[in-house]
Image (cartoon, rainbow, N blue to C red):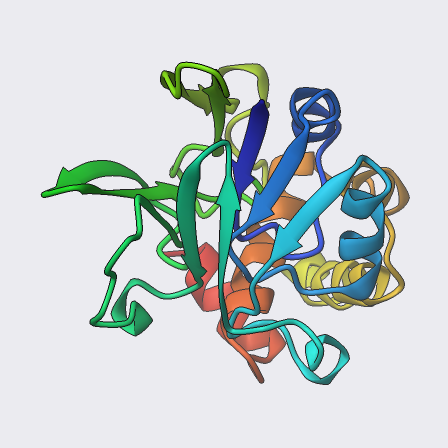
Length: 220
């Protein structure tokens, strides 16, 4: 059994991510999906389980904030925020969570805690990561692979002139809300893909933020 563990896509499904997870038997998503379209795209690849994150609004009312499932003889508990992990984890083998956008893999007693990091919009210099778990259902032997896509993605955003940035930011946000891909948004606005990712990351993780707020965070 091959399991893809991802989180914090924030409406961005990279081609590189889709290529990695399309041959997995099961996909686990740790929340901050950010759009119904993202759920539908992932479900087309096969059996998938989601939990609801803080960026998942009214459209996600049918997605649970936590869930427990059994896969390959192991019990998985899923929740978006580490701080929301329930106290009673009796019988749980793996805890899957996200939110921090930081990869983590640690074992405490009989429980292994897994945060695949973010494979959505890059948060500044943080890596773009996910996990692939393989379980031998007969022996229950398993392996966990950290997949870091950062080396294959373009780094660094070249900023347009300041007087153009406010218009560009508005157009990028508008395109994102129209469910256009990052590649398409970059092409339409004639800017680097890295800049689009940075703007979308700031916008999706700071509800209510305005253009000036986004500009300030880009410049710092």
